[in-house]
Amino acid sequence: MPIKVNNLSYIYLPKTPNETKALNNVSLEIPNGQITAIVGHTGSGKSTLIQTFNQLIKPSSGFVNIDDKFVVESSKKKNKKIKDLRKYLSIVFQFPEYQLFEETVEKDVAYGLKNFGLKEPEAIIKAHEALKQVGINESFYLRSPFELSGGEKRRVAIAGIIVLDPQIIVLDEPTAGLDPEGSKTILDLILSLKKEGKTIILVTHDMNIVQSYCDNVVVLNKGELVFQGTPSELFSTDVSRFSIEIPPLYAFCQSLKQKGLNLDISKIQSIEDLMSQIKEKR
Amino acid sequence: MNNLTFGRYSPYDTFVHRLDPRTKILMMILLMVAIFLQIPTWSTTLILSGLVLLFLVIVMITSKIKIKDFFKSLSAMWIMIILLIIVYVFIPNPNYNPAHIVFKIGTYGVNYDAFYQGGYIILRLVLMVMLTMILTSTTKPMDLTYALEWYMTPLKLVKFPIHIVAMTLSIALRFIPTLLDETNRIIKAQASRGVDYNTMNPIKKIGSLLSLIIPLFVSAINRSEELSNAMEARGYDPYGKRTRYRKLSFRWIDLIAFIVVLAIFGGILTLRIMVACGYNVDLIYWIFGAKPLF
Ligand SMILES: Nc1ncnc2c1ncn2[C@@H]1O[C@H](COP(=O)(O)OP(=O)(O)OP(=O)(O)O)[C@@H](O)[C@H]1O
Ligand SMILES: [Mg+2]
Image 1 (cartoon, rainbow over the protein chains, first blue to last red):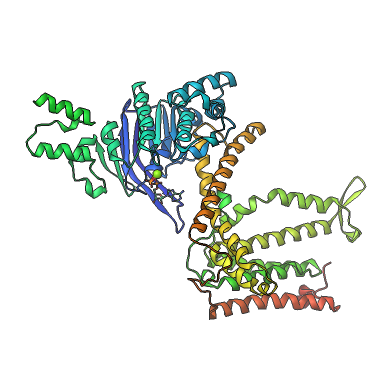
Image 2 (image 1 turned 90 degrees about the vertical axis):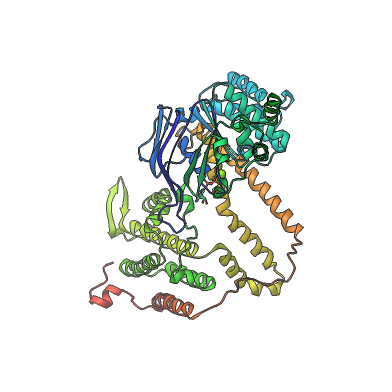
């Protein structure tokens, strides 16, 4: 278990009239080498939770244990390993295109590497590799990141994180505001990262993504953990109380099953899976 | 990061919060003038400033401003305070009484009066900071601009575009918290890329600040463009006549507060006028019948 969250609480602006309890005694575990989704209504504390993972914010109480290598806790004392932690577990924020600032695309991607002490020529070479991985064409390398389209910017920003080669990658709504094709590029990238053995944590509102791409799912509601398990376990319970909608594919399989077709819904992640199961039955 | 939020509006419901913003602005101006009226003899100055200080502290406590936040904002000023002291102590001033030399550095005599002058300026600065902090943390930015717009109404006669100025001002004020949130967001995103904003290495520091400032400007410019497009799309006309949802109104609590502040202002002004007319204004002398100390 790489990430153990233990009785974690976080309060924004404590002791002021705007005090918000964003996380309340959350305990959960996120397994290694898999894709875990964090879902929940807007304002349920998802972004807050992931920010504690690499100590961008310190918990008000409780702690997070990352792979038994790092511990993020509420104590005031300085964490000397914080830079290593941020290299081990990196976060791609919501709308990461806003963090671009260098003159050229390749320089921007290499920027993180330089912060971690790598020198220019090697950093640029690695940047090219990362850009290739996210599907950015060579002709873009020397252009200004501000001239790119929204989806291209997003991919460059993601390249800026995966170039650091973190073991755990956290993505906060990476597909928000992208067209279906742009979303697919990013989701395929996530799958290829999983194949490399990385642990992926994905914050999302899209249950189709949860069903088709994720191995585990964690549901937060008003700062509290309300569910942890596999996507099909989640959809087979009464999800309307978490204001989650069952994805159409799952609903479709469910009604097929009700009509007498013997399907193993937990194994169905895509239309292709469904078709092959139907073919087997014939 | 936290000292940037100094003076941010905090939504309590206290006496000062309920006052009309126009009253608050007028009272602030009166108190600022009172603070800057110079009255000879340091003992009198000290007593008067002390009274104003006491008054402001009481106002701060009743309007639930944390004294701790105030000290935090002062700590950002300490360099200025030290510079002021140095300037006052080491620049010779013929008005200083040569009898008040405390000690000598070489042939230069460090004068007691210099400390008094420097300290007095710092005291005034502190009082000014307190005043602005009280105003901004008890008044919504929007209400502040409404109040300013109201005070600018006479300028309409000379065709001054008060509505445009007020609108610009309120948009600017409205976006301060947004920009602060944005700053926080970018800091977190860049920290994930290994940027260390607490570094002491000056070259690295400049680099890390660039990684913050450029995205901040880009997003601010994008935002302003979006906002102006949205305003235009809704048919905003800066010269149009408009009514307002929330009307400002003076109430009896404004009168009470104003009378209290006017009394303080009037008292100090009276003393100042007496000085101008050649009276000896020394509170210690008046109260204790003792001789003026300096
Ligand atoms: N910087 C902040 N200051 C004060 N309160 C905050 C801050 N950031 C978040 N909150 C509050 O904390 C709660 C949880 O916010 P969080 O951003 O973690 O939600 P989220 O689950 O990521 O929502 P979304 O799906 O909209 O991104 C919300 O009620 C929010 O208003
Ligand atoms: Mg969020």
